[in-house]
Length: 88
Length: 441
Image 1: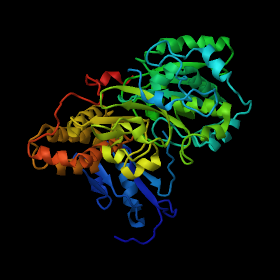
Image 2 (image 1 turned 180 degrees about the vertical axis):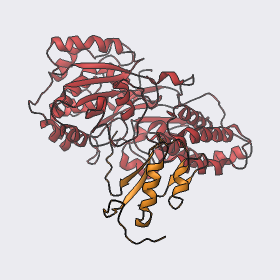
Image 3 (image 1 turned 90 degrees about the vertical axis):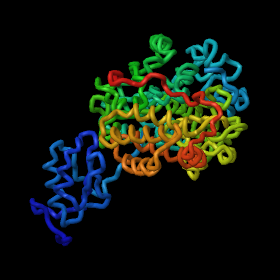
C-alpha cells in the first residue's frame, strides 16, 4: 500500500475526505469493514467504528468502493474540513 | 406542582421593563402560575408590556438580539442571532418559525409554567421571530397533555381580534417523549411524520418542516426575544453575567420533595436556588446533565462558565438536590433505564448499547454486581458516545459517567453488597409506564 498522493478515478486530485456513517441507515451488514479494514472495524454489536482521521490518499479508492457497495447506502465520504454548525 | 419558594426570595416588584426579577413570569403580587388563574390573560399582558413591537423591517431585530447576547434556553445555549441570520438568508417567505415547548424532559416544568403564566410573551416572540426571518408560517409546538392547551387555543382568536398577529399560528401537539423536542424530530412531526430525530446535515435551519428553512426556538427564548424587542439589549444585559447575559427559568427540585419554577439571573449562586442542607449531590441540567457533589455545588453559580469545570452545564435549567438519605446509584439507574427506553431505536449503537448500560447500572445499584460491571459500563459508554444521529447517547453517557464519578464511594459500597440509602422512595421524576412504539406521533 502506498501513501503517495493520487488522483481519483475521474482524474480529479483526491482532496482530504472523511468517512461518515449515517447511523440511522446503517443496519450493520459489516461489508465496509471487510472492504476497508485499515479505517473501519466493527463494534461488539456489528456496527462500524470509523477512524477519526481523514482518508489517506492511498485508501481513497477503497473508501469509495466501501461507500458505493454499502448495502444500506449508509456510508458517505465528506470533505474533511467541512464546517459543522451547532444549534438546538 | 406547588408554589415554589425560591422566586419569592429572588423576585422583587418592578415595573415592566425595569431592572428587577421576574422578567418573564408575572410579578409576585399576581396569583401563582401554579395555583390560581394565572396572570396570563391578554389584557394584563397588554397593560404590562403593550402591543407587539414590530420593526417593519425583516432583520432589524437581529442586531438587537446579537447585542443582547441571547442564547437558546432549550438547553444548548446556541446564539440566537446566528440561527436568525441563517434562516433569514433563505428566500423571503419560504421560512417557517416554530416555538418549541415540547419539554420532553420529565424533570423540567419551566416551559409549561411559562406557557401558563405568560403565553402572550411567547406568542409575541413568535411573531417577532417570524418578522425577523421573513416567515409566513408559525407553529407553536407544545405537549399534547399540556394543562393550558385549551386556554392557548382560546387565546389565538383574541389576539387576532386585537390585530396583534401578522402570521397565523398553528398549535401542534408534541408526543410526550424525551426526544420530541429535538429539532429534527420536531421538524419530522410537524411535517407529518413520527417525532424521531434524523441524520444531519442538512440542519433544520437549512431544511426543516416540509423541507423549508425552519427557525426552531424554545418558547422561553421567544419570550426573552419579545422583551429585548421592547426594552433593548442594554436592559437585557443588566442581569446575568457579561458572557451569559439575562435570566433563565429553572425547575427546582428541593430535597424535601417540593418542586417549582423560578426565574433567576444567570450567575446566581446555586445555594440561593436550592436548600443544600442534608443533600448529597445536585443534578444540574437534567437527565442529559451531570451530578455535582453538594459541597462543590454550594460554591458554584448558575452559568455555563462556572459549571463547565465541574463537567456540567445549565441546560434547560433543571436543578435537583438529592436528599442525603437516598442512594445516588439507585436514582441514576432509574433515570438511565428511562433514557434507554426513550431511545428512538434508529441507530444501532444506541439501540444496542443503552439497554446494556441500563442493565449493568441496575445490577450495580441492586447490589451484588458481577466483577465485570464497571469495565462493561466504561466500554459501552465509549461505544455509544458520538455514534447516534442525535445527542441522546452522548447525553446519557454524560449522566452515567458523572453518576459513577460522584457516587464512586457508593459504587464501592455496592460492590461489597451494601447500600447507604436509608430510603428507597424514588426522588427524581421518571414517567411511570414504559413508553410504547405507538406514541411517537
